[in-house]
Structures are given as C-alpha cells and as structure tokens.
Image 1 (tube, protein in one colour):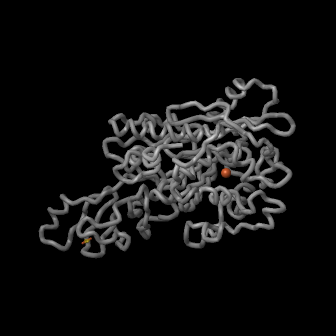
Image 2 (tube, rainbow, N blue to C red):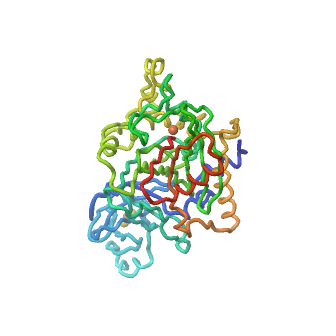
Image 3 (cartoon, rainbow, N blue to C red):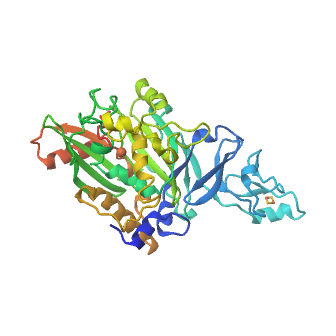
Length: 434
Ligand code: FES
Ligand SMILES: [Fe+2]
C-alpha cells in the first residue's frame, strides 16, 4: 500500500514532477524508427511524458524531436513542410533544424538577425535498435546511451513492435514483477500449462503448476533491481528465473523462446496512457520460426487496428472474452498473452490505480521493491542528488535468464548460478514466463 502522496509521486511523469524529472535523466524510446522511414519524410505526432512533440527526419536522415507548436504564434508544426534540412511552419514560414535552431525567418525584415534569438524546444534523438531514442532532460545532464547488449545489434537479431495501453505506466509495469500471476492468468485449465506451445526451451509447453511461484532473492543493483523467482515443476525440479529491472522502465521479464531475450519498455504518453515497446533480441539472428510467430501468431503481439497502434481487441470490446473457452479450456477466455495482461492492467479501479486501497501479500514483494526504488530516487533528485544509473551504461547489461535445477539444490547456490546467467553473453534459454 502507498500513501496518497506516494502514489501520486510515483505515477506522475509530466514536466516538473519529481518522477517526471527522474524519467528525464534517462534516454527513452519515443517512436519506432519505421514511423519516420526516410529523409524529409512526413512528420509525426509524438506524446511522451505528457509533452506534445513532433518527430521528423531531416534531409541528412537525422531524427529531430521538437515542440509540437511553433514558437512564433503557436501554430501546429504537425502540418509543417519538412524540407532542406529543417521543418518549416506553414503559418508564416519560420523554419527549424533538428537542434531547435531557427534557420529561416522569412516574413519580417529583421528576420536575418532575429532568427538567431529564436529557438524551439528540441530534444537530442538517435536511432538505435529499430527505435528513436530521445533525451528530454536538462542539456548539462545528458548521459551516454544505456549499454544494453542489443542496442547496436544487426537488424536480424532484434524485433520490435509497439502498442498503446490506456493506463498509467506503473500498473502495467508491475505485471512484470509478479511471479505468481502467470500460473493463473496465463494458464489453461487442468493441465497447469501456459497456452503457447512454442515457448519452452525443450519445444514443449512450459509447465506452470506452482501456484506460489515466489521470489527467493531481490537485490538492489546500480541500475535497478535483480530478482530471482522459483517455480516448482511437477517433476520435482525447480525453475529459477532472473528478472532484472533497470530504471526507470526497462523490464526484462516476459516470455521468449530458447536463446531469445525480451525487453518490455512502457513509456508514459501521459499519466493515463502508455506506449508499450515490446522488444525481442538474441545474440544470434532470430530464428525464422520465432519471427513468424511475432508476425502472424498474434500471440506475443496483439493484432492492431490498421494504421494505428491500438489493439483490435481492447477495453471497449471486453478484449473479446470468450466465455465458452473460459469454461472449458482457457483460464481467462482471453485469446492472446498480452491481452490477458492488458485486461488486468487497464482497469485496476481505473487507468490510474489508487494504491491506498490495495492489500499486498508476500507474493507482491518485488512490486514493492520496484516502487520503493523509484520513489527513493525521485525524492533524492528533488533534493538535488542526481541518479547514478544513467552515468553507468555498463549497469544496463542484464537480461532475463532461467535454469531448472534439482529440487534439493540449495537456494543460495541456485540464486548464484542464475544471477551469473543474467549477464552471460552466450545463447542461454530464457525460460521465465511473465
Ligand atoms: S506561427 Fe509558425 S511561423 Fe508563425
Ligand atoms: Fe503476464
């Protein structure tokens, strides 16, 4: 449970809020690279951390992320002309480059000199791993990019799609550090199996029989928190899974095939909506079978309405719940994995959960730790203490990992082994479902 003040602090990421300031110390994905496919392409609207922005790519192919409104008299730059190394406002022709400098001010005689005094808010942005990343904080606090192993990988080794959720980032993110939910939410009746036959390392189904899957170790790291969960299988073995969380929203939990890792990134659009970048990567090219399940399976990624990032099955259709399937086969009756989660997340007493009314149990320990860490770092920053994590790119190299061990393996030994796997750069099966 949080106090009203803590809940507000941890959920609000708009400009000038303590959590908003903390988020603005990190590089964050703000769009898919394919949304701005080439030089001088159409500009697109982007809303991030409650700020309305326009993203474009200049003649050189450089991404630019600027205020959605022109500094002259506030006209919408979405309608701007993207031409010759800058975006030109169509109201009176003022033109801005990707750095935010005004490079042409053609409607006034003093324009040649006055333009040097005019700038538009512009955030540094780069293209990496199929996404456009931006740094939205103070200029003198701009850190290096985080050192994710996948950031500079060839295209064949990564895959990303995004979709919009109508809720606060935190209640969505909390689903990733909730080891016990999968046994219920993502299961099928009777067999205790997750309902995707393609998931486990052996090619068989992941067995989810342990209703009390729990975290056996939760430790702070420089960049966030490293959790280890334990899930007892019917054959007596215990599956240990490492789930690192890195500030402020980088979650490594999630289902992936053998040797394939995941990163779930939930970027606040504002306090009542988020964009979910669901990312898959491997140290080797992603197998064709894996790719086809992303493209056509509708299992890992929900089907989207054409031309939008909105899932076809959503809150307005009750996620197309099939009550017959729910009675006879599926625990939820909701078809796809992400939709099962989304149905739980988008309406936790509404899109912005009131955490003064919850009743947490010991199974919620990891969730508590993540919240506490965010609150602590945001409060420290409000008091003038800068976060350390952004300045340590090497602290972002964790990924999820899983290992099944005999039931009598001492927990400390198991934790040590799976922790080591969480930074192992070889092809390792990431088994842990989320
Ligand atoms: S409002 Fe943009 S140039 Fe005048
Ligand atoms: Fe889940």
